Amino acid sequence: MNVSDFKPKDANGNPHSFNALGLNRFIPNLMTLCALAAGLTAIQYAWDNLWEKAVLAILIAVVLDAMDGATARLLKATSEFGAQLDSLSDFLAFGVAPSIILYSWILEESGKVGWIAMIVFAAASALRLARFNSTQGKLPDWKKKFFSGVPAPAGAGLALLPLIIWLQFDNDAFVEYKFASPLVGLWTIFVAGLMVSRIPTFSTKMIRLPAKMGMPALAIAALLIAALVHAPWPTLTIMGIVYIACVPFAVQKFRAMQKEYADDEDLTDLAIGANTPEEFSSNE
Image 1 (spheres, helix red, strand yellow):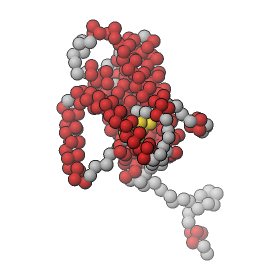
Image 2 (tube, helix red, strand yellow; image 1 turned 90 degrees about the vertical axis):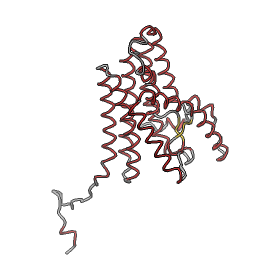
Image 3 (cartoon, helix red, strand yellow; image 1 turned 45 degrees about the vertical axis):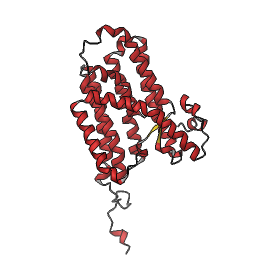
Image 4 (tube, one colour; image 1 turned 45 degrees about the horizontal axis):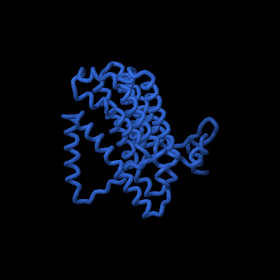
């Protein structure tokens, strides 16, 4: 008698499969769903004119987005399902939610410019995420140390920068400058352009600290957390400005590595976001 004869069988007479997923496989996806929920909550806060809470909800989504991928790799729980879920969550939390927040805050007063900016930013977020998913597996290892264009979480932060600056002042401080509200729309479109461009920006994979810098790095991280807790708006403003200032350094580093690896990609194409025909031929 065969050992398989003792295994429980289903209605069709086939042995039951005892393959089961461990809890560690669910933790990263649960974090992704929490990020999605934070994005939806930000929209609710925007509709209630609770701008501080709306921005903080997006910030929570950014933190969760950074942690879910790292957690998946740490727990060896990466999967194609998790990658697709993460992209859908990013589109809502960093594409749709910031657009609605900005439109509810000031873009509605900008007329057609505001509505166009809202649509362009959300569309740019979707295009940027789609390009990331379709090209990530085709890049050489050294290029994976850079993002192609501004990533969605950073793009959401930059788009919300005018609101973050406004939160540092009295709500009536800029009433006399309402005529300049279309400038916020133009800024939003500019950020959308950075997202769909292929200008190289630093990825966290570029961060490599010597062992002796471990403690100082933790001290700096603690300082940053304390600053975010006690002075969130000035801290986020400084972080946004520093991020923008780092883009030229990322381009310079990319050029240097291009020479090192004998890569002939034209940086002019990177600036305008040009794509190869192959990137569009894989649509299903």
